[in-house]
Image (cartoon, rainbow, N blue to C red; front, side):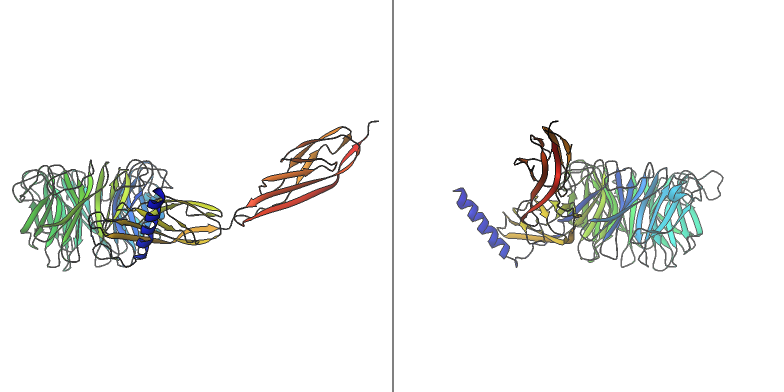
Length: 618
């Protein structure tokens, strides 16, 4: 009965593998792949940027000294990781000094280089030009991670950069906040929004402090097509540059001209806590604002309880056109917003809710992505994560495939959607899209080495596959979920994993494959000659003479045969033999082993003529 079942299973699998024309089931919210990056300490990812070579660069902070992190400058450092198109790490780089260093964003510049912005407490290492207490900084790197230029802008004590963008004139615009010294003519009190404009050479063109007597924070700034800038943050002021506060903290939207002068401002929110975190310019010139709120009055309606994602569509003059709360009865914070090719919006953040608009939360907090149209109607939503705390920070469209997105944030989970956590909180990167319910993926370790190289393959597929077929690239296949395969010859090998299952609901066969080109690189091992050799002590004396033989062969033999010259033989690497009669004796050692790579038995013999001389008793 068992034999028949096994035969039937193999037959079914062979039929499945022939169904190459089976169409994939479309879905926009499946996980194509996910990666955890970090060490045993804490990593907090801030942003991700697709690169021109089809890969991705992730940036954030690290306190680790192990795992994926190879260099640490002390305390908290900036950590950059470059991934290829399939999500495998190509290189990593640590930037920092001996104190705390933070990065907040990465942007692709018009020349293909990358702009990083952040803030630092360090005064040495990569931030030796910091001559203040806390300074904001910019850095330009290429896609190989080389620093092209960097600069600190101390300006005022206690400055924090939260966003940086390239400007049409080739310079940069940065936004954040600063706690200045009383007596500064630009200082309003508490934290003020800080905006810094630089030229192409990173020299400061102008800077502005904006706000009132309370605390004012800047989070996101964009150059406008017709000139000037639009920015979003939040404030609890209601004087100075700020008016119209609804109570406690409001999202604060304001527009500047090219010289940094305030043209208009608008407080958005209700009587409780409202924050603006991201702004997007729509094709018709309006502003889409994303943040979170626990208000349910003023400009805000439809709150589900506690904090909700909050989206508002604002006209170019600051008038609110529409707004919508998204979430459940628990804590939901949105941190980023993107616009899709068809004019809809996708928001990302963290959700603790398990009701309302939120479904599928795995526990604690999850990445929560929600797509909605210009009226606020939800098109889809999904939680990504595990039972630990997972916080989404940035969402980016995939330039190589319409409808796909990348999510990045930090994760402390080790289950559900999350694999490969190194300990504590890791960067967690998710590619959203691919085959509905079934997506092939695997990890190989090690990926380089000398032959024979044993490689362990670990399945990371999605959708609960039933069958696994690995093609190792050297003519062999494996059908275990997590096989170990030994590469016997030098070469570069492409590895393909095909996963198959029958969908229990649709009864359709689902099949997905992934090929990793150049996945395994095997070099020729150092050639150690297979040569027999030995020594003997003593080699002269009177009978009876006891002699110890010591093997000195190379090539790791597995069989030893000594012929002592007096008619006796012995097996073993280091025998002891007693010569009973006077004479001169020639000793021979034969070694053998099975060479699995060559598929044959190796043999080598060495003879020592007149090696042992035994005299008679006098």
